[in-house]
Image (cartoon, rainbow, N blue to C red):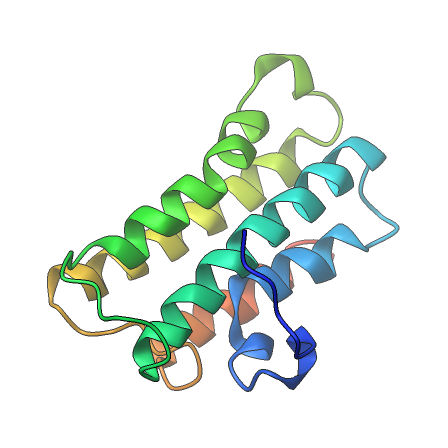
Length: 143
């Protein structure tokens, strides 16, 4: 477990992060309490991963030689949520919301994977494709 002395909002990359998007959606009054709890839990795991790889990028942590560590970390951090979203028991009147969130997360994973495959670091602030998909994801609950 990592401990931070700086609030997340003071980290320049945070507003462009998946953890921020998950946190914002989790605090929407439109979604069920069960989904909100799952999103909050996942946002914490994703935040830990994003903090770690951003520290690697700025040289505060030793470099990783595994080119897929960013993608693998996202996949691990999102694993429980992705499983939850596709459980048949949760498919009810909000099924379209669950499917929308699942689809957006899988698209963001594809972007992370493509950056790893091309050995281009995922720069949360300056990656145009990431930011476009993230902005679209943040609108998932809008009519």
